[in-house]
Image (cartoon, rainbow, N blue to C red; front, side, top):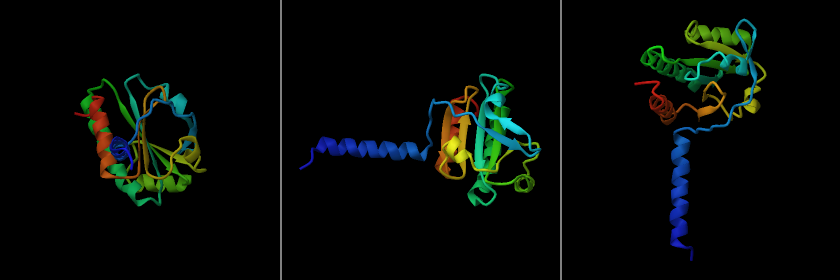
Length: 179
């Protein structure tokens, strides 16, 4: 017969794992440096771009794909959260929003940028070789990662779920980025 305390501990650990998984994960490890291409086919290096951020700025990196229906549904929600955060900041900080089209070419990225009405709303980047899967350690699309100036992962959510969206919103609220 198993020890009842062991079973209770096992249930608590299982519950915590499920609870944390549903709300995204946070890590203080820096993300590895990597490069993307913008729609002008210019190489954008993450580390170089983050150096231009203030210490309070946050970057929302949204890894998406043109053939991913949930990705297209998530983008307007992320745009809205970004706008709300920047309005409530009163200029004290900025939340930047970059969309990375993983496995898409420049033409497809440009087409979907127009379809989703992203011009002048966000930085559109292309990862034509899908290197994000190994460099950023994403397992699928959509994936959202919040980064600070030091390239530290503040929050990571995978998939488009209500709980993931709520976790992102709650995280921005907790940082004072949204009211």
